[in-house]
Amino acid sequence: IMLLLLLCGALAVAGIFLLRLTVFKQSRCKSDLAEGKTVLRLPGANTGIGKTTAMDLARRGAKVILACRDKRKAEVAIQEIIQETGNQQVIFMQLDLASLQSVRSFADNFLKSESRLDLLINNAGIISGGKTEDGFGMILSVNHLGPFLLTLLLLDRLKASGPSRVVNVSSIGHKQGRMDFNCLTTHKDLGLGSSYFQVHRKYCHSKLCNVLFTYELAKRLQGSDVTCYSLHPGAIMTEIFRDSSFWWTLLIKPVEFLFFKDAEAGAQTTLYCALEPGIEHLSGHYFDQCSLQTNIHPKARDDATSKKLWELSESFCGLWQDLSSGNRECLIRFHVNPSNSC
Image (cartoon, rainbow, N blue to C red; front, side, top):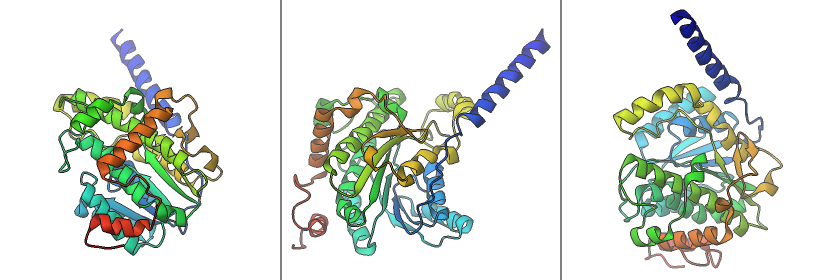
């Protein structure tokens, strides 16, 4: 009986592993349209699916800019990417999404140094408590406000480089998210509490922000050459749980091994949304497994909610109500340094 149980267990594990190899890794981006494009890859590009995506885009001939907080880690990743791909056009630019001033400075530096921007990939996804120097919840700032502000500051460059795309890496966790505007307004955070469960809930709320931002951005970009997409990369074996408790890590590791994708598989839907031709008419939509998801929850496509989130985010970031008026690049320089005049 014991041998039979062991055999059944071994067969079960083998079956799960086979499922992981065949089903979880079946979707691949086959497009080869990255050559000559300038790609801005936001934090996360020095590890996990961010690094894998950057590696793939560099291999396809794109100029890849890694916008990261940790210069040392980014430079190590850049050397690996250059060595692996032979593409010398992989560079680092300093950016800390937890600081709105850092975002503004980055935008100013980018616009001065780069003449075009074909792809903007917002890949930030942290699960960490605490507050930023601006007084916002860390998850709110890094996962939503920072990418929101930077995307808007770079919109004119994206338009001038069109056709161009914005890709927002969300998560299936957005289905557990909700928008509590009272908490946002009162506490400048997506929720209250600092337990791991409460912090994870904030993460889910932030991923809903990503989907709503993409939906609203697409509406505001109608008639332009810029399209945008949100996506679920899949359950990935990355460092996102690095701040978890010992017991949670002990619990999640076996589940990761059996059911989670590796970084290469996890990068495919991002690459699909960034490069796949003929999906421009699907701007604002949500993707998974390199395909459009049509059964998305109504809360993720609610016009009133997406508009309210946009306006509150503008207010939090100190943006003007009409970002399209006047010379935006001059306004950006003024916003970074008020002594500049337009």
